[in-house]
Image (cartoon, rainbow, N blue to C red; front, side, top):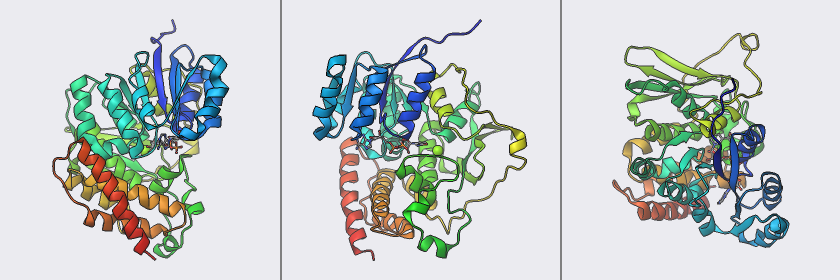
Length: 391
Ligand code: NAD
Ligand code: MG
């Protein structure tokens, strides 16, 4: 007999992005498991309209207020409520009808809506790793207080989460987060000095949004994931190790105190972890391509090159210093990546800008929410000043 999971009512924040569109593919393939109550987008009104006409959500939000009229007119006769702006995005997650919020906005911009969703007791499928990097103590503390589960969407954290099924009484000895190594794994330092954004945007295994693709090329993505793992699985820095695995088949590994290791594996396809986060604790049937051992006679592992990719150590340092230092790291990285994408700085300068910004930032050991907001604002300014002085 086919086992049926109860229908889940979803809000998808950032529905027009890489994760958002793949989440809607999951919903499209499983109409008996999900309904879409809310969709939100930054400024891609055209795609938001198409998605809304297909999935008929209760409400949509477009962050860019200049697009409000366009979206309203397109959805008027469908009875879909349309809102615009930051405040609307922050508030819509509290709507009664929503059960689970998929946070697929990129960067710090997703923090306020994630916190509000938790405050309203909504379950969270978390793709927006930057929210845990910036304010992991507040986000996980609030979730614990509200009895809210945070289901990881990031493939590495989904792997750890899947390996922990049935192990609740067994503490983790350590975890290995796997990294593809990105497009520059084999390249020389000289090559990196003149690497272009077109080259950095070519990820070997995953097709993702621009910001995370650059983060993957600098290995900052793995650094952010180390901090994400610390908060999701209550780990100390010494318990987290990064291992480069260029084929991206083992998505991460947990080691227990008897020395036994569990890994979760499969072809690199974000729809698998997205679907698991949306359907947990159930697994739904999927038609996604299956792994074939004959295609992968060799799986390889190597240490990350920390000299070539200093962002990884910067993230470890920020995590060890704690307080608002990961927030400083994140804001500096967002500004540096955006400057690189506008050809204002070179590839190697991304790490330099972050390092200098971290040195300049005002470290606080026990920040509250407003402190994080101010840290983010101040750090962006510092990082911009450093970029202006960078040749
Ligand atoms: P993306 O750039 O493709 O999409 C981002 C989405 O957020 C879009 O819908 C965009 O309109 C919206 N958005 C952007 N800025 C916004 C703002 N200021 N206010 C409101 N909405 C805004 O990004 P993505 O690759 O889908 O990544 C989303 C998040 O998921 C990131 O935090 C990323 O680190 C994480 N993640 C992505 C992948 C992946 O495969 N793409 C894998 C793991 C984790
Ligand atoms: Mg990942």
